Image (cartoon, rainbow, N blue to C red; front, side, top):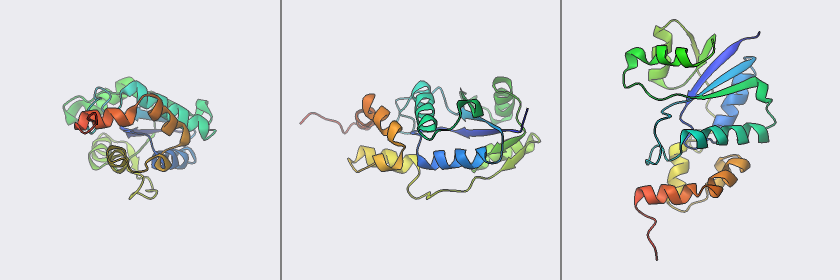
Amino acid sequence: MGKIGLYVGRFQPFHLGHLEAIKYMLSRVDELVIVIGSAQYSHTSENPFTAGERVRMIRLALTEAEIDPSKYLTIPISDTGSHGVWVSYVLMRTPKFEVVYSNEPVTSRLFDEAGFKVEGIPFFNRDFYSATFIRSRMLNDQGWEKFVPRSVAEYIKEIEGVRRIKDIAGTDKPQ
């Protein structure tokens, strides 16, 4: 068995920056455990998509990118409400891993304090490949599709994700 890495994200939605990050991580490990964080949240402005929808987005994007499904595992994990137990909670729900990839300060610190090797991930055009930026473009009817894999854009359209974001924000009113 080879080296296994862990990557935590909310993926609201999964975008091209996430895809490039996963490619980078898979160039450094043999297998990647992708944790969908805050899995209990959906239908909010920060977390419009369900955990199941995010699992599907990741699978579609990685299939489109021709990434071997044996190289990754996707696991939704809810928040605990307590940083003191969160790493233990993750460890109970994931296979053993050797390295954690994160640019998020709290995640990095918690895993570092628990004794894990933590590595940063190069940002890929962070100004554009940010879920917050993409959700804002969806909300304001600005082109957003070019910031996500084609299969993810199609899926978001299929589930009426833009309409959901507008409904949540209260801006999708009948004309």
